[in-house]
Image (cartoon, one colour):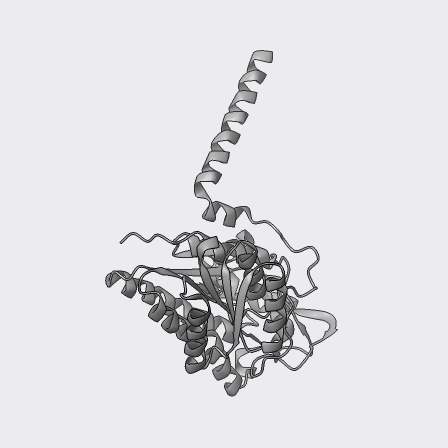
Length: 335
């Protein structure tokens, strides 16, 4: 089955978790590139502000307040997107929360709520999207490298991402077996400079939960998401450092298991108290793309660029090799 996706400027894109972090950057970027964008999150006030900003800049955007853990609310939001723009071409599952702390210290009600958002939010988004994409389109789910590499102190978060990854991968197989022309992509970011730690429930420290350095800029993830809306892909890892960490954990599991809990101490600020309350059960603060804790965040990833643009990377590699050979031959002539 051959999948052909529309250019971004011709698409209607639905984005969940669009009120902060990766989702907010993706929404602004997609609108800036000509797509019609429909935003979903629990923060109606923030979504309204973002919508006014984009519309005033000449973009096309609308929004719905919805909790992705509520399937009926997600269905209603999808119907509202179709009523506004006539169709849906791509659906981005980005909504998510986090819990920091040892797994035995994380309250069961919080664990259940995290699965409601991070796992069932993906399930609900996929179910709603498939019902509107039978003639073709893309579903892009923002997962995490934590699905490949269990990561203290984000053990429960990692468990939700393992579950979402399994669901997405099986969905891809089943749709392909039924010749349903929907591209299913899992985007797996490394550590990204978003406010997720500041919005998290924290049972590991009274200090602010953070993404340990090095952290990548969320724009890299937004670009990978939108590239996947145009080009069918199975999965994309964002951040070569994170990919190296995964390989280390897989090839040296004993050393990784010894090292990871000790490195986990770097996931907390040395002096800032944890802001509260978390956004686990309620919308909480929104409207912020980045945490403000990583001014030296990485804005480029050669690894991710190579994954997204293999032909360009190969061409540059050939040119570099040719240049090296040319200089080597000149050196021999000079001798």
